[in-house]
Length: 562
Image (tube, helix red, strand yellow):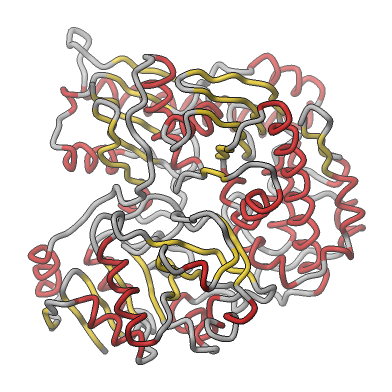
């Protein structure tokens, strides 16, 4: 059985192929059309997935879509009747835009399958089921508490439940405008960033501020009841009216003037980010405690855009009663294509669970011949290195910043050693250098460490593995001066643990680096510049290399140096 999973309704359009329960390939459309967080129909991703899987449109048996457009329409209509000010933007988004997206899908469908043809069946699946239930079915757990958190799907914002084998039980849902995601998007906009896009910047800014300055005020804004239902004090916000300026005049009266996108960060911006981050963590921990008491499960599966908040995830690992947390590498809307496919396969068709998504490297790949052709096509010169890992480790030990393009591309927002920019974490000025000369982004923003899974506990205070870079932990105090470039101002780091079986070449590189420096850790950030998607092809990598301050590019077994 072949299932095509699709997310085209929300941002981060994605396609995937699942064959007899195995995830063959998944690709985000943004990597191909070069529009970050794109909402375009994933035509290019679909075609590339089919090519990689070696199948045609005629081979597809089912299509799983991460939206059920008819869900919660009664709740939506009641809401609009109570808030007529929201009618025009609501009509534009939930009627006009929704109609356009569905029309685009059906035009695509009818273009590939004629009426008299044996065409695949289409399954529209509730958004939060594709998030958290779909994540559970591909998690390593046979039993787990389930938590989905985002801005909103069809209308739900938070989903709580329990999974065992192939069955899913729903306990509680919260609905718009009572939304963790919208709450956090507002402080993101207040800090001068783009909401529903730059929340990671807010998370990185938060340790620069003092959460206690505004904490008592923010605690009034976001509350969770005894059953886990979310309540937002809406007088501070405008997002409930579906308008662009998400904060109200009251918000400005309390927290001060919002930051202009190009202006300096004042203390109020840092302190607001810190308080919103802290209260978000506290409230989600309350929900986790409620879930644990209700399920007594050892493990938690969390999904949705808010689950990309790796600082929050780190606190769940440390402070909740769950032994560990599974967050899939594409836990935002991009992963709902995968979640839709697996909810169909395991939840609806009740097929036996036979796949664990522990490998993020499920995208496109290029061999040395294809890479050489791209290099020659650009009229460039490169050296072929038989031991590319040893060469790259030498460059890193010398303090060079390198582009690292190897094997199948990752899925999700975190570069995990296939499409990465790497550097030596021992240089104190390396963070500032990369931010200024390579990434062209805000100077405060931290970089992540990738560490050998066998050695990470020598440097980091984390009892569980973190293969997808979605759990923040503390750097051991005695090691903070050893790896200053990946230690944030509060002594934390967004760690990736690197497993030899999953990515042997990246593991070998870090091992070679350890031989030269004694440190089994490298600085890792995504291979792109601010505002652009991660590079996908050799041509993208070459362009990024020559337009930034990178010192070298290790692409396949080829090396280019400036």
